[in-house]
Structure formats: structure tokens, C-alpha cells
Image (cartoon, rainbow, N blue to C red; front, side):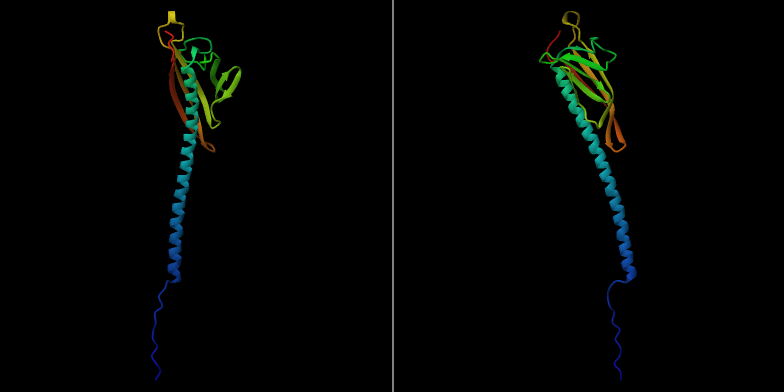
Length: 178
């Protein structure tokens, strides 16, 4: 007699099961990598806005510190400017004539005939307005000198992408002029 053949079962995966598993894995990885790339793009955009606004904030802080410690405020030679002016002139704490204005799309400081740009090229300023009050000499004016600055523009957040902004700050003269 011939020995009976034993049917042995080999455990393992079939080719169809492997193809389905690899296909599902590829599909899940495609979805997750797409979401990851979107998150990287959003993070770059947020960092671009933060960098631009930080740069603008530093420029405005420098401006307000100079204005606060200065004297002889005027809006381009006209004194008070309740309807707004595009430039602001004053004497800093060292007695040097300083001017802030918009040149092209940048905030510019002029001191001793030397012009310096205060904003980064990623920040495009479209509007700069100064509102000054109390700039007249003491006998005719009983207000402390005060300046409100409003800056509007856009911040570049990547190639072809820009975010608009409007920032308002104010400065009051530290020394009394009443």
C-alpha cells in the first residue's frame, strides 16, 4: 500500500492580499503626506506674516520712542494736523531735526540729511498718516503734544501671497510743553 498523502497547509499571504495591503498603505500615505504639505505651507505663511509684522512693530517702536523723547513737533511745517499728514518732523532729544515719511513703499527716517529705511522689503506700506495735536507753543496751546500714527499696507507671506494690515499707535511727548 502506498502511504496516504497528507495535505499540509502552508500559512502565509496570497499575492492578492499583499497587493491590497500595499495599495491601502500607499493610499493612506498619500493622504497623510498631502495634509503634511498643506500644514507646512500654512506654517510658512504664518511665519511670513509674523516676521513682517515683527519688522513693522520694531520700526513703529523706534519711531514712537524718538517722537516721545523729542520736541517741536510739526506735520511737514504746518504744526497741528487734525486731518492727517504724510510726513512728521520734530527735534530729537539731541536737538537734531528728524523726519519720518513714506518713500515708495517703505517707511523712511531722515536725520542730518541721511535717509534710512526702517521697514523690510517684505512689508509694503501703502498709507502712512500722522495726526498731531498740541504742537503750538505754550501761551496759545494748553494740550500736551500728541501724535497718532496709522500705517496700512501688505505683508508678503510667500511667492504671490500677501496679507493686508492696518496698525495704529500713538506717542505723547514726555517733556511738558504746556
